[in-house]
Image 1 (cartoon, rainbow, N blue to C red):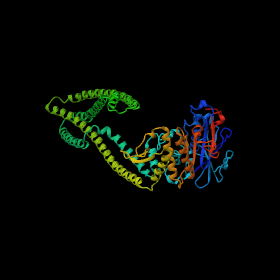
Image 2 (cartoon, one colour):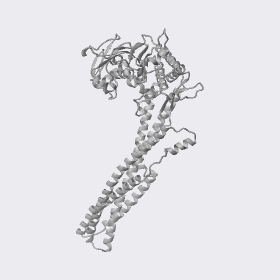
Image 3 (cartoon, rainbow, N blue to C red):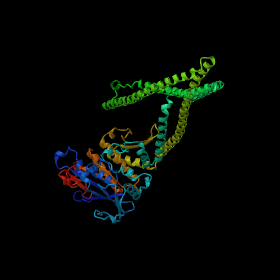
Image 4 (tube, rainbow, N blue to C red):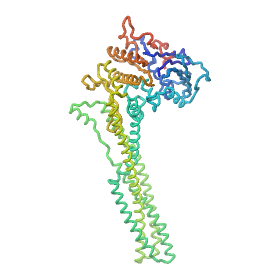
Length: 598
């Protein structure tokens, strides 16, 4: 798939752009010297990349320039003509105002203008956004990465300046690694499905651990506690049986028996339940008070910095700042947590007072109920037995609740062990896969490594290294760096220009590795020559032309002053066929959109 043409329903405000098969140059000119030190993005070099992304059905985002300045662009409708792998052409129609209704037109001739085409002449007219993505995905049919949506692929082919900070992770991938690492593994020829399964199993285990943690911290050994509780329940049930038999043998007259039954069946049961409630509340209050008394973690960054200084190790100010921000954040979280705990503590104390007051009332009533029985030795035994009966029932109820908690935790622990076994199998398969692909000299990964190194070597006269391995958590890690001729990593990749060079070298290497597959055969590189010296610029240009000869369409943006030193009096750096768009700072006529700066 290649780009063919980009145009709009307002050609006087947005001139049509025709893309060539080889090198396509978007050239920015600074005609006013005072603008050399200013941001020149208002010309539209980077904006063009964002517009292409929009036409490939990027989700509407409030920071996207079309919607950030919606009133300015709402009347625009854009058309992107692309060449499919089978030789057909597909035109995508998308308006700014009704951006979720997409139209498509298949055709055999390139460089068409369908801006006046009526609705009935489109093959698919104003389909829903999700339908449109599915249709486009089917037409593009990237056979090397079938299980991935085409949007995942194109993200690496239309990088903006924000996407040059990391070779493998785009700016939009700020969330979990699950959202991009499995794809990257598949792209490089590893088994991405193992990475997905690995993250899913780790997530399941983490959720179980969160369930277990609040309960397990109260017991040192769950199995020991369970055995102890079972023994206590056995003894208490035996005591309960003996007491109930003793009480059943009392032979009071019917009236007395009625009073006793009322006493045992009503008051004593209520008292036992309230004793359980009181015990539970007191236990919860104790735990909260313990939590509130936990000391905060102390960390003195100045002492650490002094220690590093004495050891002659640089301790950057940024790390000091990051640690202090972390500590401040920790204090804020701790204070917020204490506030919630204090609220819960006050609520529990109120509940405890209410339960104790009700207990007092019930006990007084109970005393009245049994006072009529007198103070004989038999009655005393009866009263004592009833007191024990209520206490034992409360103990048994509490012990059964403890047993339920431990049984649940043990079940969760069992599930965790089973998940861990599955995770171990997955990570073992991942390790085997990584080792096999790394050792296979004919693998896609080996090809990408070779092409990447060739690009870096030609531009910088250094070795370019791509490594893929598993970290301590068993997850994929990807790294790209420069090495000197001795094979020692350098720090050049830390600078933005060099990171950008790593990025487009990687993207070119991937495109070449898949050159004989149905994989996109275009690449958009924004600011390709920025801040490079003349030798590196010349070498970069040679690489770009070499890769266009292989059949890869390359669109680059640059400022004329960045490449002027590459041209001679008789030979300009770019031919007229290569320059597809010239932008300049001399009024709105020189901008991508011929409108005032927004």
